[in-house]
Length: 159
Image (cartoon, rainbow, N blue to C red; front, side, top):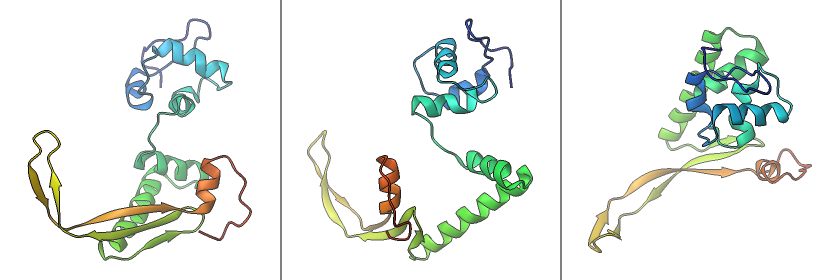
């Protein structure tokens, strides 16, 4: 992974410059962040993947999901990517058809219809008609809400 990017002078942790840009979004220099990651007890192999998570600024992508399937299940990377794509396609197809998608202990995705209304351009104050449309809504389960807030939740089945 190391492509000649900077390393933490105190800990000699290699950081891939290409990976750094997409992962952290941090204003810290690479060497400062690498030192912070090392102080948090993360090994040099894991530092690029976990640096942004420790900083709390990472977005999980389709590639990340496929990589997690690859690591945990043992499918090839190509099979993992195809599996993740198939699941996302199934979710999207259900939502497009107007169905609700409920994932136990995670939440519910559904499509809500919004009627036409009059909006206002905040800059000019001019009234503008906003056409009717369908919007996707996500409602997290009580289990997910509790986990996000660091609380224990005993009933894993309810939403």
